[in-house]
Amino acid sequence: MIKAENVTFSYSDDLSVPVLDNVSITVADGSFVAVLGHNGSGKSTLAKHFNAILLPSGGKVYVFGQDTAKKNALLDVRKKVGMVFQNPDNQIVATVVEEDVAFGLENLGVPSDEMHERVGKALDAVQMSEFAKSAPHNLSGGQKQRVAIAGIIAMRPRCIVLDEPTAMLDPSGRREIMKTIKTLNKDMGITVVLITHYMDEAAQADRVIVMDSGKVCMDDCPKNIFTRREELLALGLDVPQVTELMHRLREKGLRVREDIIYTDECIEELVSLLEEKYD
Ligand code: ADP
Image (tube, rainbow, N blue to C red):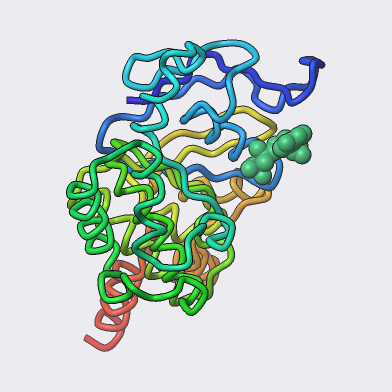
């Protein structure tokens, strides 16, 4: 659904040190892709190419086959790919939640009956219906971010690109957003591109892309990515905490699996280790 072909980008006319350097990736319809990379590696710049906020200096980006650089493709690309940013306060424009969610639809000229229905469904999808009449400034960070996501879903995009949507949230807000993202992807079939610097969030995707100095340097399923611990550390990244725990236990001579990236499988592994010991 999204295809970047040899994309090069620079914020200035100087292309000698590009921010994106010959990036080629595809994002399949219905997939959940996480993008990792240290600060300044080009993640946000790449994400902004996916809904034509930025256009490549060299190469092409296609969204459902449409070249994003074509002027007449812009509206269609923006309808198909919605973006959610880090700071919910910058994305909320109205003083009542349901009006905020309706804002994008008003701009698209959606008739009021349909608008009402879409706003209701979008708030339902992010479990914020009970706050429809609330003032956004009274909500928690996680709730505000869910309202921002509802505003995007109401426009019925095929894909949502989220640029560090949990960076400003507390742990419970982060959990709410990850749960919402998974519902959108698994239950509603919306393609998700999640930029994050949290390894445990990336582990929940189907696929992880790692960027470094404007290049894609790894592109694989989470298990295969997070077993490359040394390479990730060298790139200034980490592995999920449970993966690190297993690594440390192996260093102490315990025979535990090295491909563990989820808490549940870590618990199972530790339980079977204890059972072996006490059998
Ligand atoms: P990341 O999302 O991985 O932190 P960014 O895509 O935000 O990386 O930034 C990549 C590089 O582009 C950085 O060196 C950053 O300073 C630079 N950059 C980002 N936005 C702008 C901008 N609006 N103008 C000029 N340089 C920018």
